[in-house]
Amino acid sequence: MKTDESERLAIQLERALNGEAWHGPSWNELLEGVDREAAIRRPLEGVHTIAELVLHTVTWQDAVRKRLESETPDIPESENWPQAELPDEAAWERVYELIAGELQHLLYHAGQAALCASTCRRDPLPVPCGVARSLEAPRRRPMSEHAARIAWSRGSAAFDYDSFSRDHAWTFPDGVTVPASSAPAFRGGEEAVDPEEALVAAAAACHMLTFLAIAARKKIVVDAYEDDAVGLLEKNDEGRLAVTRITLRPRVTFADPETVSAEALATLHEGAHRNCFIANSLRSEVTVETVENAL
Image 1 (cartoon, helix red, strand yellow):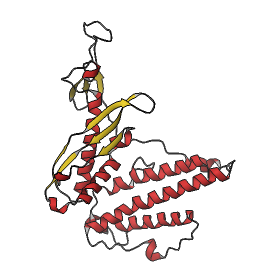
Image 2: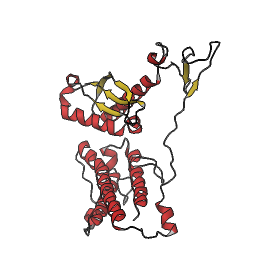
Image 3: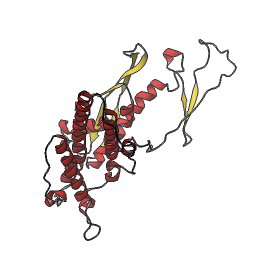
Image 4: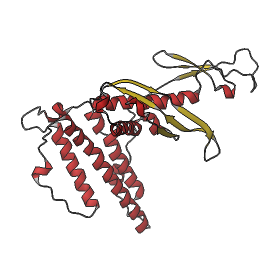
């Protein structure tokens, strides 16, 4: 298999799990908000439950992984369509996480296969036209679109570097307008938000919202969340000025702090960082320094 085709397959698998899948909603989108009771409910006689469909998918992901490892999978009917016995919500959470775990394992071995193919075969075997088309990465279908209108006018002041006004406005589709400027160090106004501050705030807010979503899904009640985030502007490895590092310092207050250990808190933050849209979009290094006394 050619390396670029392996990458296209990997893209399809990743999108099937996390979003932008060619067929519609991804697994994560479909299962968002599904609790144990809904997972084991059988809508009609003879129809599989959500939990059974998830376990069936995991079984066949494991079968493909074994094929990649030169094993011959033996899947009895009891494992092909396993009966989902979920005694509590935690059991359903573990089943839900199996999909991501098996998929990442499969992608790991697919990458190994691609590396071996590119190393051992100088001229890849031709791929039939129809198959090549089916392996192409699907056209990107965004989950959502986000817009902002940036407006600046010169006014009556002279237009030279030292004197032109950096003040401008950010207007969003809901009508909210934010006064903005460049940072004071770059001759901007101190009363307005600068792009560097907005970037840090966006990273911190995205992490917080993702954290709260994960906590709510796990039935962990959060009373308050604060973060004194800091971003550093410096030269990157290419010698260009960039916000290279963003440090988040969240302080979380839980309704029942005794039920949330330090390890559980770290796991929540790891999940929030891994799934934060903004952090996943940045080249900057984003780190989380958990405040211990916030438990």
